[in-house]
Length: 151
Image 1 (cartoon, rainbow, N blue to C red):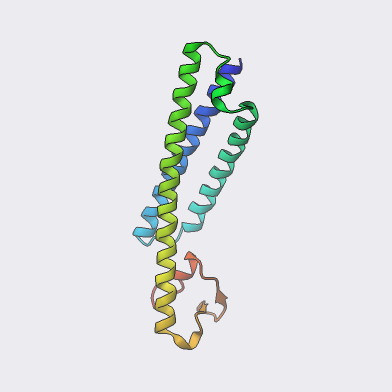
Image 2: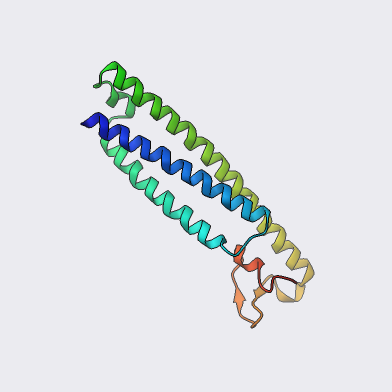
């Protein structure tokens, strides 16, 4: 019973990491192709998946008190090998997704900085502020890049 619960949590975490990876790839493609329409939707979905992952991670940490490898000692060798294999795969996938996410956020930060610099040089009279077609100031996030779909 405990073995099945542990295995289930680990497999669900791997599934969520794969979903996070897919969403990150979708966001990267949207940035590269300048498809800003659903950009916020992608980030909200990514945040929701990360929240689901955090809940499972908390559950796993609660279940594996004293550390994972200390915990799995109680199982038979076959079960222990299965769980440790899944756990190592989870950690590897998590590192890959984290590295890809960091690269994505670095790229987006670079795009933001480039655009802010462009607008500062192109429109020095605006003091670095962006406005909608109706004259309302907007924030300096990715949505700010699509004011009129043209300059």
